[in-house]
Image 1 (cartoon, rainbow, N blue to C red):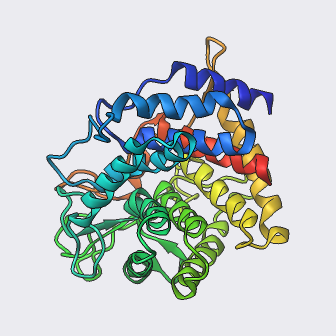
Image 2 (image 1 turned 180 degrees about the vertical axis):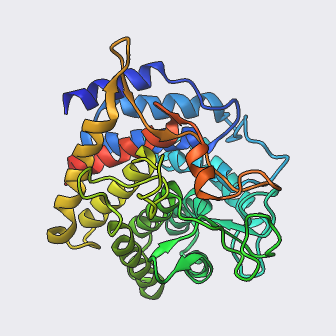
Length: 362
Protein backbone atom coordinates (compact mmCIF):
# COMPACT_ATOMS: atom_id res chain seq x y z
CA UNK A 1 0.00 0.00 0.00
CA UNK A 2 2.97 2.34 -0.47
CA UNK A 3 1.29 3.74 -3.56
CA UNK A 4 -1.70 4.78 -1.46
CA UNK A 5 0.54 6.64 0.99
CA UNK A 6 2.30 8.40 -1.87
CA UNK A 7 -1.01 9.37 -3.42
CA UNK A 8 -2.33 10.80 -0.16
CA UNK A 9 0.80 12.89 0.38
CA UNK A 10 0.76 14.27 -3.18
CA UNK A 11 -2.97 14.92 -3.18
CA UNK A 12 -2.97 16.89 0.06
CA UNK A 13 0.11 18.86 -0.95
CA UNK A 14 -1.50 19.89 -4.26
CA UNK A 15 -5.05 20.38 -2.95
CA UNK A 16 -6.92 23.61 -3.48
CA UNK A 17 -10.47 24.21 -2.17
CA UNK A 18 -13.12 22.74 -4.45
CA UNK A 19 -15.12 25.97 -4.43
CA UNK A 20 -14.62 29.47 -3.09
CA UNK A 21 -17.47 28.98 -0.60
CA UNK A 22 -18.15 26.45 2.18
CA UNK A 23 -18.88 23.22 0.31
CA UNK A 24 -19.54 19.54 0.79
CA UNK A 25 -16.77 18.38 -1.53
CA UNK A 26 -14.06 19.83 0.68
CA UNK A 27 -15.94 18.30 3.60
CA UNK A 28 -15.43 14.83 2.12
CA UNK A 29 -11.66 15.32 2.01
CA UNK A 30 -11.59 16.78 5.52
CA UNK A 31 -13.55 13.80 6.87
CA UNK A 32 -11.19 11.44 5.07
CA UNK A 33 -8.18 13.17 6.61
CA UNK A 34 -9.69 13.08 10.10
CA UNK A 35 -10.32 9.35 9.68
CA UNK A 36 -6.78 8.78 8.44
CA UNK A 37 -5.39 10.65 11.43
CA UNK A 38 -7.42 8.43 13.75
CA UNK A 39 -6.07 5.34 11.98
CA UNK A 40 -2.45 6.36 11.53
CA UNK A 41 -1.62 9.39 13.66
CA UNK A 42 -0.29 11.09 10.51
CA UNK A 43 0.30 14.70 11.54
CA UNK A 44 0.00 15.89 7.93
CA UNK A 45 -3.64 14.80 7.88
CA UNK A 46 -4.32 16.60 11.17
CA UNK A 47 -2.63 19.75 9.92
CA UNK A 48 -4.56 19.67 6.65
CA UNK A 49 -7.90 19.76 8.48
CA UNK A 50 -6.91 22.40 11.01
CA UNK A 51 -5.22 24.65 8.46
CA UNK A 52 -8.24 24.50 6.17
CA UNK A 53 -10.69 25.37 8.93
CA UNK A 54 -8.52 28.04 10.50
CA UNK A 55 -8.62 29.98 7.22
CA UNK A 56 -12.42 30.16 7.12
CA UNK A 57 -13.50 30.19 10.78
CA UNK A 58 -13.09 33.59 12.41
CA UNK A 59 -12.12 34.06 16.04
CA UNK A 60 -15.80 34.86 16.66
CA UNK A 61 -16.82 31.49 15.23
CA UNK A 62 -18.19 32.81 11.95
CA UNK A 63 -17.87 30.65 8.85
CA UNK A 64 -16.64 33.47 6.68
CA UNK A 65 -17.43 31.86 3.32
CA UNK A 66 -20.81 30.30 4.22
CA UNK A 67 -23.53 31.10 1.64
CA UNK A 68 -26.40 32.39 3.79
CA UNK A 69 -28.57 33.56 0.87
CA UNK A 70 -30.07 30.12 0.19
CA UNK A 71 -30.84 26.85 1.89
CA UNK A 72 -28.78 23.89 0.68
CA UNK A 73 -28.43 20.71 2.73
CA UNK A 74 -25.01 20.14 1.15
CA UNK A 75 -23.72 23.11 3.16
CA UNK A 76 -23.80 21.10 6.38
CA UNK A 77 -21.36 18.34 5.40
CA UNK A 78 -18.17 20.34 5.84
CA UNK A 79 -19.25 21.07 9.40
CA UNK A 80 -18.42 17.53 10.47
CA UNK A 81 -14.75 18.51 10.51
CA UNK A 82 -15.51 21.11 13.17
CA UNK A 83 -15.97 18.36 15.77
CA UNK A 84 -12.46 17.15 14.99
CA UNK A 85 -11.05 20.66 15.25
CA UNK A 86 -12.81 21.27 18.55
CA UNK A 87 -11.46 18.04 19.99
CA UNK A 88 -7.93 18.70 18.78
CA UNK A 89 -7.65 22.37 19.78
CA UNK A 90 -10.37 23.09 22.33
CA UNK A 91 -10.92 26.44 20.62
CA UNK A 92 -14.36 27.90 21.32
CA UNK A 93 -14.68 29.29 17.81
CA UNK A 94 -15.31 25.78 16.51
CA UNK A 95 -18.12 25.20 19.00
CA UNK A 96 -19.71 28.48 17.88
CA UNK A 97 -19.49 27.41 14.23
CA UNK A 98 -21.14 24.10 15.14
CA UNK A 99 -23.94 26.00 16.87
CA UNK A 100 -24.40 28.18 13.80
CA UNK A 101 -24.87 25.18 11.52
CA UNK A 102 -27.28 23.57 13.97
CA UNK A 103 -29.33 26.76 14.12
CA UNK A 104 -29.28 26.87 10.34
CA UNK A 105 -30.73 23.36 10.16
CA UNK A 106 -33.48 24.34 12.58
CA UNK A 107 -34.94 26.64 9.91
CA UNK A 108 -34.19 24.46 6.88
CA UNK A 109 -37.37 23.83 4.82
CA UNK A 110 -39.02 20.43 5.22
CA UNK A 111 -41.47 18.26 3.36
CA UNK A 112 -44.79 17.45 5.02
CA UNK A 113 -43.39 14.06 6.08
CA UNK A 114 -40.66 15.83 8.05
CA UNK A 115 -37.64 15.33 5.81
CA UNK A 116 -35.43 18.21 4.81
CA UNK A 117 -35.74 19.59 1.31
CA UNK A 118 -32.57 18.83 -0.59
CA UNK A 119 -32.15 22.44 -1.61
CA UNK A 120 -34.25 25.57 -1.80
CA UNK A 121 -34.10 25.24 -5.58
CA UNK A 122 -35.31 21.63 -5.24
CA UNK A 123 -38.48 22.11 -3.16
CA UNK A 124 -40.31 19.05 -1.78
CA UNK A 125 -37.48 16.78 -2.93
CA UNK A 126 -35.70 14.17 -0.81
CA UNK A 127 -32.36 12.94 -2.15
CA UNK A 128 -30.26 10.15 -0.66
CA UNK A 129 -27.30 12.52 -0.86
CA UNK A 130 -28.92 14.85 1.65
CA UNK A 131 -29.04 12.22 4.39
CA UNK A 132 -25.26 12.03 4.38
CA UNK A 133 -24.85 15.79 4.25
CA UNK A 134 -26.85 16.51 7.39
CA UNK A 135 -27.83 13.53 9.53
CA UNK A 136 -24.42 12.35 10.80
CA UNK A 137 -23.65 15.96 11.74
CA UNK A 138 -26.95 16.16 13.63
CA UNK A 139 -26.37 12.81 15.33
CA UNK A 140 -22.97 13.83 16.66
CA UNK A 141 -24.10 17.28 17.74
CA UNK A 142 -27.15 15.77 19.42
CA UNK A 143 -25.08 13.38 21.52
CA UNK A 144 -22.44 15.95 22.45
CA UNK A 145 -24.50 19.08 22.99
CA UNK A 146 -28.16 18.52 22.21
CA UNK A 147 -29.30 16.26 25.02
CA UNK A 148 -30.13 13.42 22.59
CA UNK A 149 -33.43 15.08 21.73
CA UNK A 150 -33.06 14.84 17.94
CA UNK A 151 -32.59 11.06 17.71
CA UNK A 152 -36.27 10.50 17.00
CA UNK A 153 -36.32 12.97 14.13
CA UNK A 154 -33.09 11.60 12.67
CA UNK A 155 -34.50 8.08 12.68
CA UNK A 156 -37.77 9.32 11.24
CA UNK A 157 -36.02 10.88 8.26
CA UNK A 158 -34.30 7.59 7.46
CA UNK A 159 -37.52 5.63 7.90
CA UNK A 160 -39.32 8.02 5.57
CA UNK A 161 -36.66 7.40 2.95
CA UNK A 162 -37.21 3.66 3.37
CA UNK A 163 -40.92 4.25 2.78
CA UNK A 164 -40.63 6.53 -0.22
CA UNK A 165 -37.43 5.51 -2.05
CA UNK A 166 -36.89 1.78 -1.46
CA UNK A 167 -37.58 -0.86 -4.11
CA UNK A 168 -38.58 -4.17 -2.57
CA UNK A 169 -37.76 -6.24 -5.65
CA UNK A 170 -34.34 -4.77 -6.34
CA UNK A 171 -33.53 -4.20 -2.65
CA UNK A 172 -32.06 -0.84 -3.63
CA UNK A 173 -32.92 2.81 -3.07
CA UNK A 174 -33.80 5.20 -5.86
CA UNK A 175 -31.72 8.36 -6.06
CA UNK A 176 -34.52 10.72 -5.03
CA UNK A 177 -38.21 11.32 -4.55
CA UNK A 178 -40.28 14.36 -5.48
CA UNK A 179 -42.97 14.48 -2.84
CA UNK A 180 -44.99 16.88 -5.02
CA UNK A 181 -44.77 14.41 -7.95
CA UNK A 182 -44.41 17.20 -10.52
CA UNK A 183 -40.76 17.06 -11.61
CA UNK A 184 -40.11 15.76 -15.14
CA UNK A 185 -37.95 12.96 -13.73
CA UNK A 186 -40.48 11.87 -11.10
CA UNK A 187 -42.88 8.95 -11.38
CA UNK A 188 -46.35 10.49 -11.38
CA UNK A 189 -47.70 7.92 -8.91
CA UNK A 190 -44.76 7.49 -6.52
CA UNK A 191 -42.57 10.54 -7.07
CA UNK A 192 -39.50 8.30 -7.36
CA UNK A 193 -36.65 8.95 -9.77
CA UNK A 194 -36.27 6.19 -12.35
CA UNK A 195 -32.91 4.54 -11.56
CA UNK A 196 -30.39 3.42 -8.97
CA UNK A 197 -27.26 5.56 -8.96
CA UNK A 198 -24.29 4.07 -7.15
CA UNK A 199 -23.00 7.18 -5.41
CA UNK A 200 -26.42 8.01 -4.02
CA UNK A 201 -26.54 4.55 -2.44
CA UNK A 202 -23.04 5.19 -1.15
CA UNK A 203 -24.15 8.44 0.47
CA UNK A 204 -27.03 6.58 2.11
CA UNK A 205 -24.89 3.77 3.52
CA UNK A 206 -22.28 6.19 4.85
CA UNK A 207 -25.01 8.30 6.42
CA UNK A 208 -26.38 5.31 8.29
CA UNK A 209 -23.09 3.93 9.56
CA UNK A 210 -21.81 7.36 10.60
CA UNK A 211 -25.04 8.08 12.48
CA UNK A 212 -24.76 4.72 14.21
CA UNK A 213 -21.18 5.54 15.17
CA UNK A 214 -22.31 8.77 16.84
CA UNK A 215 -25.67 7.81 18.35
CA UNK A 216 -25.96 6.40 21.83
CA UNK A 217 -27.01 2.72 21.60
CA UNK A 218 -28.97 3.26 24.80
CA UNK A 219 -31.48 5.22 22.70
CA UNK A 220 -32.43 1.72 21.72
CA UNK A 221 -35.54 2.25 19.61
CA UNK A 222 -33.92 4.75 17.26
CA UNK A 223 -30.50 3.13 17.20
CA UNK A 224 -32.01 -0.26 16.37
CA UNK A 225 -34.16 1.27 13.61
CA UNK A 226 -31.03 2.63 11.88
CA UNK A 227 -29.16 -0.60 12.49
CA UNK A 228 -31.89 -2.62 10.80
CA UNK A 229 -32.01 -0.23 7.83
CA UNK A 230 -28.24 -0.43 7.45
CA UNK A 231 -28.08 -4.22 7.50
CA UNK A 232 -30.95 -4.45 5.01
CA UNK A 233 -29.31 -1.96 2.64
CA UNK A 234 -25.98 -3.77 2.83
CA UNK A 235 -27.66 -7.05 1.96
CA UNK A 236 -29.17 -5.34 -1.04
CA UNK A 237 -26.06 -3.64 -2.40
CA UNK A 238 -23.73 -6.65 -2.11
CA UNK A 239 -26.01 -8.53 -4.52
CA UNK A 240 -24.71 -6.23 -7.26
CA UNK A 241 -20.98 -6.45 -6.55
CA UNK A 242 -19.20 -7.49 -9.72
CA UNK A 243 -17.88 -11.01 -9.25
CA UNK A 244 -14.61 -10.42 -11.10
CA UNK A 245 -13.75 -6.84 -10.22
CA UNK A 246 -15.29 -6.81 -6.70
CA UNK A 247 -16.62 -3.28 -7.38
CA UNK A 248 -19.97 -1.73 -8.29
CA UNK A 249 -21.40 -0.15 -11.44
CA UNK A 250 -22.36 3.48 -11.91
CA UNK A 251 -25.96 2.40 -12.59
CA UNK A 252 -26.02 -0.34 -10.01
CA UNK A 253 -28.34 -2.92 -11.51
CA UNK A 254 -27.57 -2.39 -15.21
CA UNK A 255 -24.25 -4.09 -15.78
CA UNK A 256 -25.72 -5.23 -19.08
CA UNK A 257 -25.87 -1.71 -20.55
CA UNK A 258 -23.09 -0.69 -22.90
CA UNK A 259 -21.04 2.12 -21.43
CA UNK A 260 -21.83 1.31 -17.82
CA UNK A 261 -18.64 1.23 -15.78
CA UNK A 262 -17.23 0.33 -12.39
CA UNK A 263 -17.38 3.68 -10.61
CA UNK A 264 -14.83 4.71 -8.02
CA UNK A 265 -16.56 7.08 -5.57
CA UNK A 266 -19.61 4.91 -4.97
CA UNK A 267 -17.51 1.75 -4.68
CA UNK A 268 -15.28 3.47 -2.10
CA UNK A 269 -18.37 4.51 -0.12
CA UNK A 270 -19.77 0.98 -0.07
CA UNK A 271 -16.37 -0.40 0.99
CA UNK A 272 -16.13 2.18 3.78
CA UNK A 273 -19.61 1.26 5.02
CA UNK A 274 -18.81 -2.47 4.95
CA UNK A 275 -15.50 -2.11 6.79
CA UNK A 276 -16.86 0.29 9.37
CA UNK A 277 -19.97 -1.82 9.86
CA UNK A 278 -17.76 -4.80 10.67
CA UNK A 279 -15.52 -2.75 12.98
CA UNK A 280 -18.50 -1.46 14.94
CA UNK A 281 -19.91 -4.98 15.28
CA UNK A 282 -23.04 -4.21 13.26
CA UNK A 283 -22.08 -6.50 10.37
CA UNK A 284 -20.89 -10.10 10.62
CA UNK A 285 -17.14 -10.05 10.03
CA UNK A 286 -17.06 -13.61 8.76
CA UNK A 287 -19.57 -12.70 6.09
CA UNK A 288 -18.43 -9.23 5.04
CA UNK A 289 -14.82 -8.49 6.05
CA UNK A 290 -13.07 -10.51 3.37
CA UNK A 291 -15.47 -9.16 0.75
CA UNK A 292 -14.70 -5.57 1.76
CA UNK A 293 -10.94 -6.09 1.96
CA UNK A 294 -10.84 -7.60 -1.52
CA UNK A 295 -12.95 -4.75 -2.81
CA UNK A 296 -10.62 -2.08 -1.42
CA UNK A 297 -7.56 -3.84 -2.78
CA UNK A 298 -9.25 -4.21 -6.15
CA UNK A 299 -10.28 -0.57 -6.17
CA UNK A 300 -6.69 0.45 -5.48
CA UNK A 301 -5.26 -1.89 -8.09
CA UNK A 302 -7.69 -0.87 -10.82
CA UNK A 303 -8.33 2.81 -10.21
CA UNK A 304 -5.14 4.20 -8.62
CA UNK A 305 -2.88 4.59 -11.64
CA UNK A 306 -0.11 6.81 -12.95
CA UNK A 307 -0.97 9.35 -15.61
CA UNK A 308 1.20 10.14 -18.63
CA UNK A 309 3.48 12.21 -16.40
CA UNK A 310 3.95 9.47 -13.84
CA UNK A 311 1.64 11.09 -11.27
CA UNK A 312 -0.60 8.76 -9.27
CA UNK A 313 -4.27 9.62 -9.72
CA UNK A 314 -7.56 8.06 -8.69
CA UNK A 315 -9.58 7.45 -11.86
CA UNK A 316 -13.19 6.81 -12.93
CA UNK A 317 -14.94 9.18 -10.54
CA UNK A 318 -18.29 10.43 -11.76
CA UNK A 319 -17.83 14.19 -11.74
CA UNK A 320 -21.41 15.04 -10.84
CA UNK A 321 -24.93 13.67 -11.17
CA UNK A 322 -28.24 15.08 -10.07
CA UNK A 323 -31.88 15.48 -11.02
CA UNK A 324 -33.29 18.60 -12.63
CA UNK A 325 -33.97 21.38 -12.24
CA UNK A 326 -36.62 21.31 -14.93
CA UNK A 327 -35.90 19.14 -17.94
CA UNK A 328 -32.21 18.87 -17.15
CA UNK A 329 -30.74 15.65 -15.76
CA UNK A 330 -33.66 13.28 -16.22
CA UNK A 331 -32.36 10.36 -14.16
CA UNK A 332 -32.26 7.96 -17.11
CA UNK A 333 -29.56 5.33 -17.47
CA UNK A 334 -28.24 7.27 -20.45
CA UNK A 335 -28.03 10.41 -18.34
CA UNK A 336 -25.98 8.81 -15.54
CA UNK A 337 -23.61 7.34 -18.12
CA UNK A 338 -23.24 10.66 -19.91
CA UNK A 339 -21.74 12.56 -17.01
CA UNK A 340 -17.93 12.97 -17.24
CA UNK A 341 -15.54 10.57 -15.56
CA UNK A 342 -12.65 12.42 -13.96
CA UNK A 343 -9.61 11.63 -11.81
CA UNK A 344 -8.95 12.95 -8.31
CA UNK A 345 -12.34 14.53 -7.68
CA UNK A 346 -12.91 15.19 -3.98
CA UNK A 347 -16.19 13.22 -4.02
CA UNK A 348 -14.16 10.13 -4.82
CA UNK A 349 -10.90 10.82 -3.03
CA UNK A 350 -12.55 11.72 0.30
CA UNK A 351 -14.43 8.41 0.54
CA UNK A 352 -11.33 6.59 -0.70
CA UNK A 353 -9.40 8.07 2.23
CA UNK A 354 -12.21 7.01 4.56
CA UNK A 355 -12.19 3.47 3.16
CA UNK A 356 -8.41 3.26 3.47
CA UNK A 357 -8.60 4.38 7.09
CA UNK A 358 -11.09 1.60 7.82
CA UNK A 359 -8.95 -0.86 5.88
CA UNK A 360 -6.04 0.00 8.19
CA UNK A 361 -8.24 -0.40 11.29
CA UNK A 362 -9.70 -3.78 10.35
